[in-house]
Amino acid sequence: MSSVPKVICMECHLEMKAARNGHYLEAMTEYGQPYYKVASDVWGCPRCKKTVALPNREPMCHHFEQGYDKHDVHSRFEFIGPKDGGVSWPEIAGESHKPGEDG
Image (cartoon, rainbow, N blue to C red; front, side, top):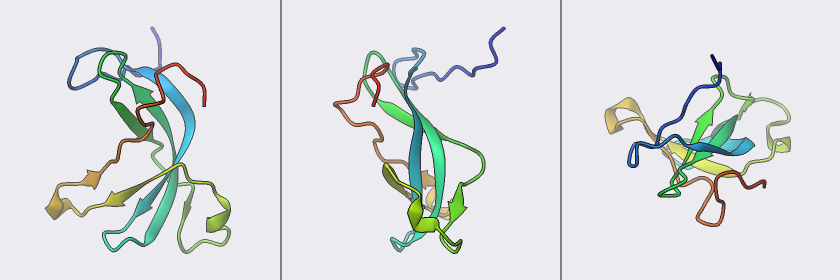
């Protein structure tokens, strides 16, 4: 049995394919200020082309740590408090990036 989790598209109910590994996200506060950076993997649906980023459990660094600006960022998302319904995730990989392509 494989230890790799299956990622399922909520719309198409198909297994998503790994589109990109090592995609760095930056969490922004609701005021547009940097909060932390986290590594993630991006998965894409082979049918509808929607993408999702599954971040690691622990951030790479927080905004108050020395060297915060040295970590690259590929995408940003706004952290929204629990009263607002959680985290707002942008489209991560974009229309031009298809599942299975490198880059």
